[in-house]
Amino acid sequence: MSRLIDHFKRYKFVLSELVKKGIVLRYRRSYLGVFWSLLEPLLTSVVLYFVFSAVLGRGGSPEHQLMTYGQMTFMVYILIGKLLYSFYNQTTKECTRIIRKNASLIKKVHIPKYLFPLSDMLFNFVLFLISLIVLVGVAVTLMFVSNQPLPTVRIFLCIIPILNLVLFTWGSSLILATLGTFFRDLEYLWNVFMTLMFYACAIFYPINKIQTSHYPWVAYIMKANPLYCIITNFRQCIAGDGLFVYKTSKAGDVLAQVQFNYLYALYALAASVILIVIGAIAFRKNEDRFILYV
Image (cartoon, rainbow, N blue to C red; front, side, top):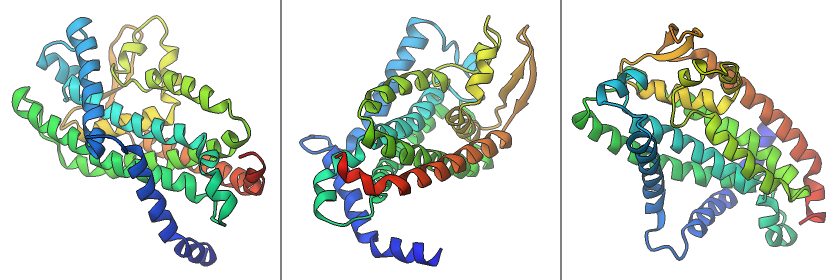
């Protein structure tokens, strides 16, 4: 372990430069720059809110929203899901081509190749933390406009879903960086998969809508998605004294409600650890062959 830590310290300057490079390249030739990390999720959430609330009438009155979405307004509910999903989507999508993207550097300089997916995840995480400013601003505004309850001390539990999100993203990134080097079609397949994941994370609707539908079994498949568990737990941390529906009957009766689902947290952590182990082994065994495919 000490050898691994010493090896990491040796290349921490390289890692920091890769992170800076990623942020600069993301917003080069852009007039707004990093400000887009605030504006993009806000605009997307506004569009989703308008479509599903104003057009389709899914939002309802403020009182209905606080009851349906766990003591938070529909806008905050959507924004939380969009922010966490976007971090995972953006990081993993870039990692499918991260080795090929840095082919010129890999061929010229000896750099541990795990630094490339790691730097990609870190600079996306920095942008994710910046984008949380939007969430704070929207939530505070709606506390006064729509009487959304103030967060409780449970808000400090946010560190748990955030940690789970980082670990789950890191494990997925290692696997995708390995496979994406050998199979270039993975980049396009992953885009399709993440479109499906967008709907499977219940970003713009509560899970009980599925539980009370004609296909309640779909809800169990959704709950098997670690990213859904992470997003749900983050919402539970923000939702004041609100209770989130955990289980309903076929008739739609609420059978169980929770304020923070520790089972979700443990499940997401276990899934993340498994992905990291598999990803680390696969990456380590194949990294010497990467240069033949870039």
